[in-house]
Image (cartoon, rainbow over all chains, first blue to last red; front, side, top):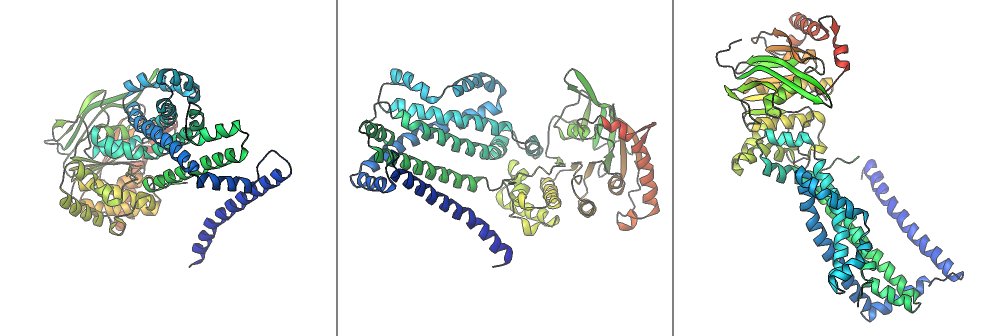
Length: 257
Length: 270
C-alpha cells in the first residue's frame, strides 16, 4: 500500500469508529439515566423484551405487517410520482394544471387526511396505505419535477444537433439527467412514508409496529414501546441504505464536490 | 470568395431578443457566404451576436428576419450535416467516451458493429483510445473537448459549427488542440465556422477571419488569410502572422472610435 492509499483508508475508517463510539456512548447514557430513576427501561430489559417478542413471533409479524404497508404505499406513491413529475416538467400546460393541487396538498400533513380517509375508505388496509401513498407521492413528485426542469439546456441542444428527436431526448437525456433528483425524492418519500406509518396504524389496525406500541401504551409497557421504536428506526435505516446504494450505482457518473 | 454555390449562406439575418420590456438586437442584417471547405473564424467583443449566428446556423434558434441556407435549402432545425461543438463540451456525463461518440450514430440508426467501428476510429483520431470506457468526470477539460470533437465527427457532418470550443482551456492545451483540429481538418476537409474571442486563434486557424461588432451585432471587417500557408509553429511565429494578428486586433479592439471594452461592458447573450 502506498502512503496516500493508507491515508484514504484511514480516512474512511475514522467516521465508522466515531459512529460506533457515539452509539455506545448513547446507550451508556441511556443506561445511566434508567438506573438513576428516570421512567425508562434499561437496555437490558429492552433486549430481553425484544427476545420474547421475537421468540413468540410477534415482532416478526408486526414488522412484516408494517413493512408491507410502507412498501406498497411507497411503491404506488413513487410509481405515480415519477410519471407525473416528468409530465409536469416537460409540458408547461400540464404543469399549470397539476401544480396548484400538488402545492395545496403539500401544505396538508398526510396525517390530517386520516379522518377523511377513514370516513371515505373504511377501516381496512386501504386508508392506511392511501395515507402512506400520499406522503411518498408528494415528496417524490416535487423532486422529479425539479429534476426535469433542471436538465442542462446545453445537453438537450447537444442531443438535438446529434439528430435526436423529442422521444429520444426524453429517454436518453432527460431521464438519466434527472435520475439523481428522483432518487433523492425517493429517499425523502421513503422517510415520510415510514414517518406516517405509526399514525396510519392508529386506524383500527390488528398488527404492525405502530399498533403494538399503542397497545403497549395502554398497559404502561415501556420495554415494548422501546422495542417498537428501535425496530422502526433500524428498518428505516436499512431501507434508506438500500436506496443510497442504488443511488451510488445509478448516479456514480456525477461530479461530486 | 466564390458565391456560385455557397455551402452556407446567411442572407440579411436579423435577430432581436426581448429582454423584459426592452429589446436587444443580437444580429442586424448580417449577410455572409461560406464556400465548401472554408475554415472561417468569427471574432468579436461579447454581445456581437457571434454565438447567436452559430445557433441560427445550427437550427437551435430562428432568425427574426432574413434566412440562413445550407446547401441552398433553408435551415429549419438541427440536422446531421451540421455538427456542433459547444464551449461547455456538453458531453453526456452518464455515458462513457465511447457511448458519447456513438450517441449520434445511435439516433440515426447505425447498426451496432458499424457504430463501434466508427466510434473507435474517431476516438483514436483524437487520441482518447485509452479512455474509451472512462466517464467524462474523469477527463481533463482538453480531453473532454477532444471527445466532443470525436462525437461531432462521428456522424460525418459536412459542416462543423464550433462555439468557442477551446475558450475554457489553458493556453498550452489550446495550442495543442488547435493544431490537432487543423490536422483532423486537413485529412478530412469540412466547412468550419469557428467562433472565438481569441485573436491569435482566429488568425491561426482561419482561411478567412470575420470580425463582428456589437450593438447591434454586425459584420465589421473581413480579413483573408492565404489558405496555402501551412499552419504550424513557424507560421505562428512569423512576421506574416504578426501582421495579420495586428490587423485583426485593431479591428476587434478599436472599432470606430469606441473600444471593445466599452461595447463589452453591457454584455448579454453572446
